[in-house]
Image 1 (cartoon, one colour):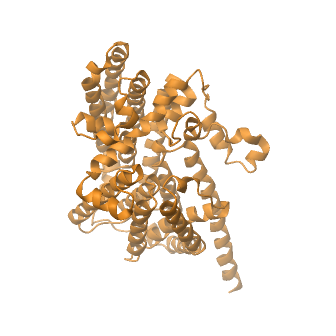
Image 2 (cartoon, one colour; image 1 turned 90 degrees about the vertical axis):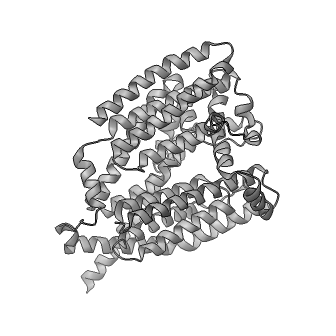
Image 3 (tube, rainbow, N blue to C red; image 1 turned 30 degrees about the vertical axis):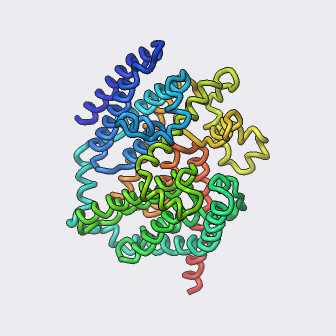
Length: 486
């Protein structure tokens, strides 16, 4: 019943937004409509939170995280301005030019696009009582292993997964540490921006992704012992160090979020109140660190790390700086409204098609340079922007491909993310396929980057999964051969 109610509310809200925002676009003086626009953004966000909360049956779900990340990176500055918070230093191009037609149109389109994303969530998520009971039962102290989990076959499968995870961990640990430390050095010796252009070999790139899968695998396989905590917290604090010393936000944040969802899905907490308090403290710490990074990267916090930390603690509000700098992603969309369809032509879906083509072996040999064209909206826009610092955007990428019709593609993305959440939750609840849970957690890590990233990054992770499965088969063949010899 709730699914029908929230789907209906979302459709009614979309219709209202359509008429209200269309009227705003026709006015000659947009400044009179700013407050109304802000209320639409806030109500859309609150409605989205209610939908993901009630339809998933969880306080924090994958769709909730995806929605929050999307809003923060596209409308973070609007939230601050709505609350009357002074963030003059961070306003930059978006808020100082808020009456500019391209900025206005970008804001309006982003609101509509995200609302269609939310509609996709409503259509896909399920509020059936049995689903929620299954989730609550799995996380209750009464949960008992079923016969399948107790069987020798299940134990053997978990042991093989553990051996596979150890193998991935062994081959990836040193290369990953070296790569991360080198990026820290580049960030200090050159600049944060240089870490994006810092090169690495293809094999090291694959191994660093193996490390992510290995950690998720070790946590899953050791979930019935206390050993999982060593890998869980070591990974958490290492990502925090990377966040602080390298300056890249989305990678560490998505990795930490994936850890959280994996733990939430497979680990039964004995003290729920203590667990909630722990995550609240960690969330505050995380936002503080991200805000500090925002200040340091922008040059406001100081020229040295010591000055940056001092200014961050004494002078700056880290929560404000985090929301303010994150909200600049909307600039991608604004620039597209200026450039299209005159300077740039619509890609007509080539971004998504070419991203899938890179899965094919020797795709660049077969299709030539065209196989990698259109896949990075940030790289395309940086050719037309003065400081070349633009990144990805889920909304801008969809508009670059389909124009005004992109709102319907955002609906498809909402359906896909909602389906992913259902698949992840059902797999974890049944506990029958550890391999699937591990690989879905790795894919989740890439999925949470998508609102501020690129579709091809999500697809490229499938390649890594294929390589990891090859390693799994090799490990299985090795231990099977040892059994035969024995």
